[in-house]
Amino acid sequence: MLVKPQIRGNICLNAHPVGLAKMMETFKRRTMASRGAMVGAASLSQKKLPKTVLVLGCSMGYGLASRMTAAFGCGADTVGVSFENEPTHKRPASPGWYNNRSFDFLAKSEGLYSVTLNADAFADETRNRVIELAKRDNLVFDQVIYSLASPVRTDPKTGIMYRSAIKPIGKPFIGKTIDLVTYEFHELTVQPATTEEIEATVKVMGGEDWELWIRALGEAGVLAPDCITLAYSYIGPEHSWPIYRDGTIGRAKTHLEETAHRIDESLRTSGGHAYVSINKALVTRSSAVIPVIPLYISALYRIMKEMHLHEDCTDQMIRLYRDRLLAPYIPLDGENRIRMDDWEMRDDVQKLTATQMIYATEANLMLTTDILGFKTDFLQANGFDVPGVDYHARVQYD
Ligand SMILES: NC(=O)c1ccc[n+]([C@@H]2O[C@H](COP(=O)([O-])OP(=O)(O)OC[C@H]3O[C@@H](n4cnc5c(N)ncnc54)[C@H](O)[C@@H]3O)[C@@H](O)[C@H]2O)c1
Image (cartoon, rainbow, N blue to C red; front, side, top):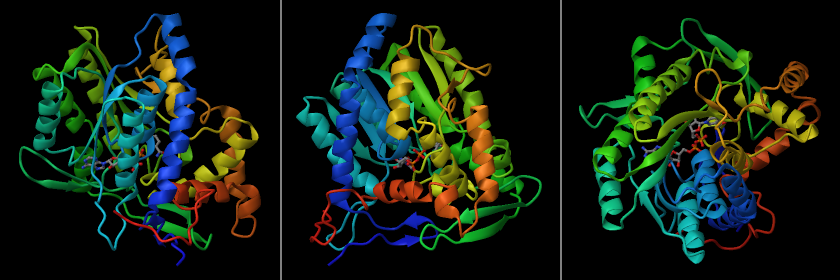
């Protein structure tokens, strides 16, 4: 039996455990190979490598790459929290569940402490579990990475569930998207968000929950005095702003960035800091469903690969640790943000990408963009299309 990806509406509904395990081994090899550079950077700047790192949203995308880099690149003990579906003997788990299982195995085989909680990070109960764990195992976090991307959040105080929306504000957005199965273009019209939808998106993807985490960990005494906490955001090119930066998600990201200033003030007195890192647009479970993003990322990949500037989540996180967090001074923009999108946002990269997007049609998509690279990354994030995996072999899901 051939195990094939089931894709609907640019979402992959199943996962392949063997393919994911192979991907995790590759990530481990790559992040371990950065170890010498991390030690070198730390010794040059006379900074300490992170010792104990909490990653919220640890199972996929940027959170997973951060955890791999902290553990295998820097030798850190890690605690991860993510919310993934468990497998049954008939149905695979969600991909992050397999990634967590592989991570714990790979980290322990390197002698690193690794505990992963499959729990709702927005719940007070999960905060309490992490605090209890930290107290039990004498963990003091010197880094907290906040990398959640979620469609829903239940406010722990009121019990109200909020649902985030990817919508423009003020007027409809019309944009092209690419169907990842047929490679057909679809024009999408997205109606503007209501006030409730804007507020709900800020509740889910803004900074409120990040602040609750840092406050709870601080009050429980499980944060190192010089703890660094990071959350991730995106800005992107102006043509995507109506649906992203100026839309509901952008409002939430603005809230996240404002929260960073507040958390930074509270940590600074003891030598700690909070930053938002603006990362590069990459294929993850969250980004493939945003209108216009598949076309933009495919064109961007083509240009950045041609210019030898392309990075995936792992490359981005290795560079974040080595060249930013472990630099003598962390380079920041005028808004106190770390810019990992510096190569993506270069003028030459943006001009060439915009040109490719204008010329891209269904007929010339393979030539004008790197849609195949996009598709490979999309499939590999679910364990498919991984070289060396026999997709005809029987798979055990649990
Ligand atoms: N993908 C991009 O192109 C991109 C670019 C720049 C910044 N970012 C930002 O990076 C962050 C992570 O995004 P990603 O693309 O890596 O996402 P992702 O979908 O790959 O991963 C999201 C993670 O959040 C976890 N999660 C979701 N809901 C949860 C809950 N209730 N409790 C615990 N864990 C939960 C998931 O289990 C997963 O580990 C987001 O803030 C996103 O805006 C993404």
